[in-house]
Length: 305
Image 1 (spheres, one colour):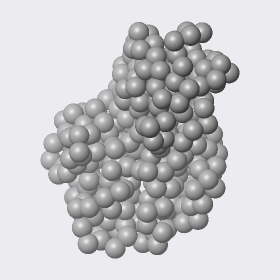
Image 2 (tube, rainbow, N blue to C red):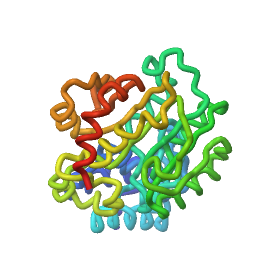
Image 3 (cartoon, one colour):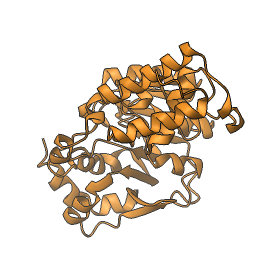
């Protein structure tokens, strides 16, 4: 154990250096080595994630140092995302339980939730909202948390992901969120919504096969979505008019598969949303536009497995 490491800030700097040396991949909630190292150190020392920097010069005990270094080594050796090591991920300002039953929460949709989905929903009065492919429940629960008068449904095909979502519903006392097990709209027959939000699998087969080792700890079914990443997206678009009210809006994340979607459906007026860091492959689409282009969407969706 390096004797020079004496303080919290020493450990954070050392961890970031080790992670850089090991060429780790970031992007699971944290996008750089320093932030990951900081969160792992604070977790190991049972300190809050927003600890005042003034405590950075606090000295650590030998046992504390050993625990931190052990966590660093596991991050390097196994390439497991930091959020799975800490068991916690932050999304839209809320703390969620995070483990390998679902993707680490990281969608830019968090920014939309905090902004009340404006200007995309305009003056639509949302009473019922839906989160498709909810995973660990972060989008649905955050929507319900910041909009306590909404009724929010959340659906996922994975029983494992839904078990994590249930724990997060309890963790955040999300009483206006209901979880449903099934394939896309399957368990929602007869239900209608003012807002549908979805972050479905959208990674192409080639991209999934080439992902860094960190992603192997996440459920593949939450990532892989065919040769162009649109196997599920097209089905979501096809069936959305059956569940959106006439004034309703669909917001969907497709990431890098944006290029394939625009190529397949060049006449659909996708409104690509600008975030603080730019476009992130997320579009808004109104009910009437989905209906107007339903024939083309349905034809393409019927060709998918």
